[in-house]
Amino acid sequence: MSQSYNRGTVEDFGRWRDFSAGMWAWIFHKFTGWVLVGYLFTHIAVLSTAIQGEALYNGTLQGLEALLVVRFLEVGLLAVAVFHILNGLRLLFVDLGIGLEAQDKSFYASMVLTGAIVVASIPTFLGGKLV
Amino acid sequence: MSTIEQETETEETTDESAEPTVESPGERRRAEKQERAQAREDQRVDEEIDHSEETITLKVFRYDPEVEGKEEPRFDDFTVPFHKGMTVLDALIYSRDHYDSSLTFRHSCRQAVCGSDALFINGRQRLACKTQIADLDAGTIRIEPLPHQEVVKDLVVDMEHFYDQMEAVEPYFDADELPDDELEEQRQDRENREKIKMSTRCIWCGACMSSCNIAAGDNEYLGPAAINKAYRFAMDEREGEQRKQERLRIIEQEHGVWRCQTQFSCTEVCPKDIPLTEHIQELKREAVKNNLKFW
Ligand code: SF4
Ligand code: FES
Image (tube, rainbow over all chains, first blue to last red; front, side, top):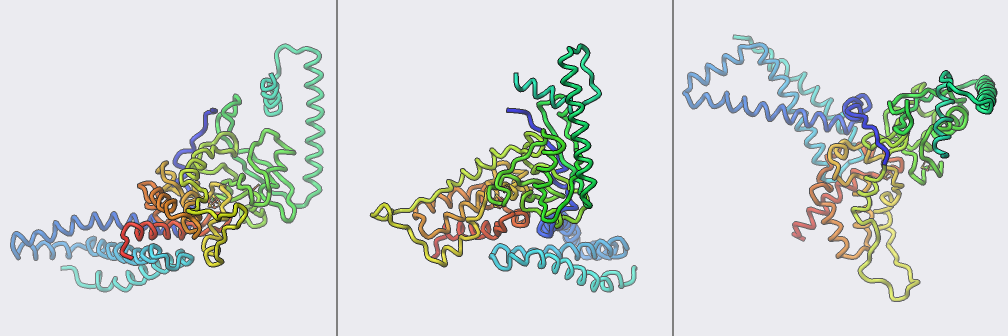
């Protein structure tokens, strides 16, 4: 056997420019999934302040809402969650074997819909005055 | 003996500045003769290029671990006269015949039947013989061996693993009962034929496997082509029940259908347009149904 040459990571994500819709959908789905898992922990941490009584819970939430960066993070969280839900539906159909020829279109549709919902939510998240 | 001769030959053509230290008259004559031949060849190539209005440039991956000075992978440029209807394979053959006879790639049928020339062309797995140069928008055509497979030389990759996976699903027909008369046909109804029609078209080119980054990360994953093979037989109504059960057992193992995460990369690149992801998904459902047995 002759030796052979391994081309390394260029073969995978070094080629991202050549990725097609299905591949992007997979990457985004993985990414948003991990973000949501990460969020779950902060979510639990914040909510569990309620164990220490009303005052602390309200204080924590108000304190967080007062930060502009938190508002932006909330918009980001919504984007991530909405995409994960919509693409999850897309994957459900893929698993049921429905509309597999339109899988790229349904991915674009979930992207567009995510964008629309996020834009529509901006007044709600960023509108309320910072205390 | 012959290999040594070949090596010196290729070295001379690629590295003309290297002068042998001790020269016999015979060697000098041969060298001169070769030089003249080379000059003639260059001129002929020049003329040929001049006369055709349009040329294209190939950027070809080169690598040869067995020849000194070529162990480092590099890209070679070849300028090839373009004519209407020219495929990437035509251009490669032209380059090999006119510029560098050591350029190595597999090909045979030139009509997308044998599956030997799947290459990575402009960032995508394609059959060279099925890819029209006119259809590629980039001016230079970048040709590399299939990713995620070991490169043996230039554009030739080691297909052994792919073939192993294909064999792993036991891709052969096995009916429960054979007709009494040896010469009697085993008929399939039209609907069933339609169902498996696309899956029978696989030409074992390996493009799908190469495009799948799950297969790249998990060497034991059967891969799209092998699962498609399993589909072809499992969905055939003539297949025996026992064999079908066995086949389903093979594909529902840890490194079988469940590894597929529906990236659609394989479906995208398959030169025979086989809906691979669809078939994998159907086998997933089939495996679940088979295990649940509610109906
Ligand atoms: S399924 Fe398609 S891409 Fe894969 S080996 Fe067969 S013909 Fe090639
Ligand atoms: S040469 Fe046979 S498939 Fe391309």
